[in-house]
Amino acid sequence: FMPAVVQYNGLKKLTEEQQQILKGLTQKYSNKLMRRYAAPKITIKLDTQKDKGHQINVYVSLRAPNFIARASQMDWDIAKATHRAFKHLENEVNKKLKR
Image: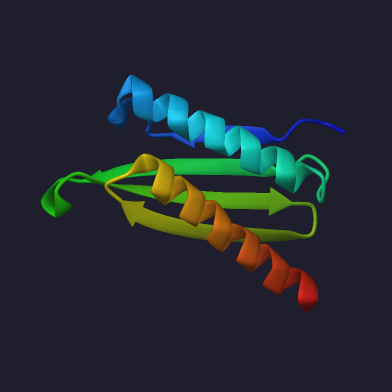
C-alpha cells in the first residue's frame, strides 16, 4: 500500500500542542481509511474563528480514485473537532459507496 498523502493548510494557526494532537489523530484515521482505499489524498484545512471565541474549524476532504468526500467540524477543542470531522467524513464515504 502507498501511504495516504496528507496535506495540511493553516497549521500555523494552531499551537504546537494542537498541531501534535491534530497530526496524531489524522495519522490514526488516515491509516484506517487507507485499509479501504488505495493511497487516499487527505486535505486538512484549518481556520480559527476569532468572532466565535477562537473556535477551530477543521475541514477534511478525502480524494480516492472513484470519489471525493468532504466534512468539517468546528469546536474550541482541536481533538473533538478532528474526531468529529473524520467521523462525518467516514459517514460521507459510506453513503457514497452505497450508491
